[in-house]
Length: 418
Image 1 (cartoon, rainbow, N blue to C red):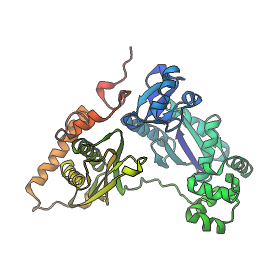
Image 2: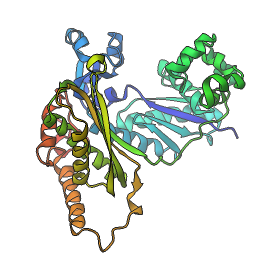
Image 3: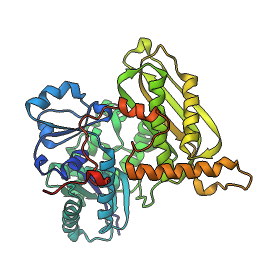
Image 4: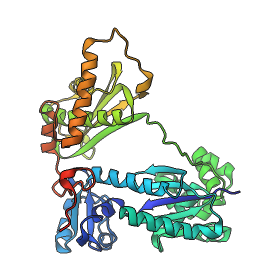
């Protein structure tokens, strides 16, 4: 039995999340902005029709937004993450084997469903996700992940579902699909392929593997296999273990003082440490980095510093001390810093580390303190308690002027029915 792969993709996901609760936002132009309200990262179809481009800085289209009454939202990742979990949980009620690919995408194993029943099944899944979560989805189905991606592109342009199981239909779609839209090709390979007159996905499908190996390495070879219906990327039903945790941000206004920069590094460390504990991981190395504006090459400065921890840790205080020590090594006061970040690397499972009877007497107290702080944050929110005044200052420096409520995760922000 040949495998069948489905791809569920939430339509304009961040925008769709903002539309779930306020009833007046349906069919209104809407844009969600990136961190610090910098640029457009999600647009409704109505906003796209007004030529708001993906990644366009907010200041460039603010006049258009006012003229056409475009609703603007700051990114509310707490809301988006919770609704994503609900979407994936809903899918699992109908498809046991799913591979969550990103916050708004999942591959499904549909091999057990007969070809003549698969469209009806997809319609039922689409309706259930819409009814249970309020999020509209598109579904593409074919024999491999790459072809399912192609089918999903078609689904978004049609009625939300596209099944590609007939060879003639697959080739017809591939013949009109620009090669740059094939999953995994990217800008680098697009230029190479066009130089060799390979313009469409169908052209790429027919390229000899020997040529692909020479010009696109094993990555290109796998793409061609998948376009020909041969599985190169099997479904991974278990979530891959994270090898690193990264938290970074670009600043709307450059930072020049050590105090301001350390505030953000502290806040990033807090957030990354919470992710560590959620994943039941410990960090063995802490890497911090800072950068000035890359568009000002004459004054450009970028540096990073890695600290090897004495003992694997997920304790925020220990990690903050390490990150602050790293920042002192690379900070120079004359620069205007545009981006900074923290990265925990070489993670290990917390269950693999045993605390001995001879551990430092404060170790147990630090663990209890960390657990208590996590409980307070869960109850009162991320601003409920801080490590010194660093994180508070970072909150003050972060711009989110158009933030929607966390309708599903905070009791005080539940939607009201009048």
